[in-house]
Length: 444
Image 1 (cartoon, rainbow, N blue to C red):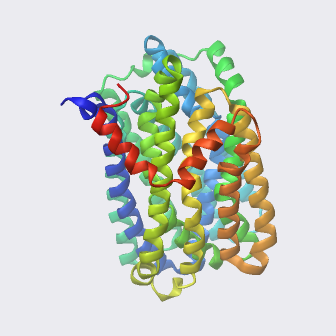
Image 2 (tube, rainbow, N blue to C red):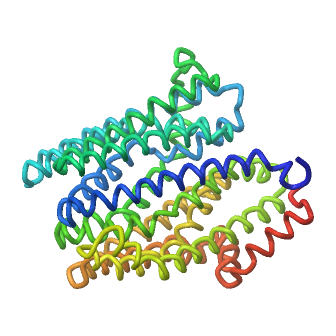
């Protein structure tokens, strides 16, 4: 292959693998979720969603803000991969174990019935297993070989999806579906490890923990870690607050809307993950080229977000009625509000990578903190009066605040705000610029 496609086929192929995997797994997950939601009803489905949202909250303890830094270190230090991987594995897995222990303590301390407590125990078991698969995924992403992690995820989703349909057919209880979620991440981790070995990843016996590297990474990532906590708050705290301010049924209504609204969130994540190594390279050698590439990424992400809004406006209602049933009719207006967040969330993914490349962790932390504060405050204000619709509105406003508006304030992030503003005010830029890119073979 020649020209633009030939030069960038490695990155295009990686993105296509990520998107294909996420598309197949998202469709399968959505189909299975519809069957499970219809079967369990809003209350039990809401409890299941709440338990695993809490798992994501406690799993933040193992993120440590290291993911983007790991990819950067692997790209920049190809001869030191065993030390990088060994150090990060110890840090992240220890953090996830701590998060799992925290969730167990929470489950034992809150006043809930036995079923809900068991759901929380299964959610705690989910945390360290999910960490293993995600850790191996970092190595594949850094080598632009996401297809292997994608295949592992697709197979595990397919197998467990069929299993969940079997649970519906046999009339299983809600706890069985929680156990199935844990089985899914266990299968994904096992398959990812097999692919890791087949692709000649450093043998586990060669991985080594470096206290010096750990100190260096943690000193750089602690702001990103705090930012990750804030990010979760404004991304997922709505489910937890709905559970205590409005009840499990409202959680179920909201979870269905959020599942549809977020069904295509893999697209920007796949695109940015694939171009991230290239952005790192251009930032080191050619600032003008880096800015051009970043602007193109923002353009595409904003247009993709608008496309998702249009799709949900046209098809969201019919999809909910057809697949989830009349008992989730209340999810339709929630979906139409929640999906407005998509363009801001999409661009936020690229901004997060900018903070890593430009050592702007402080800005990541501040903007995430403002978004979290906005979301929590609005949830307290809106949920008691409007239930799940209030939570969706709070999510939209907090996304817009953290991902766009606050970037206009600090001088260093103002150029990024202007890039985003070009995308917001001129959404036709994306197809036009991409066509020019292909035609001229730009970015050479």
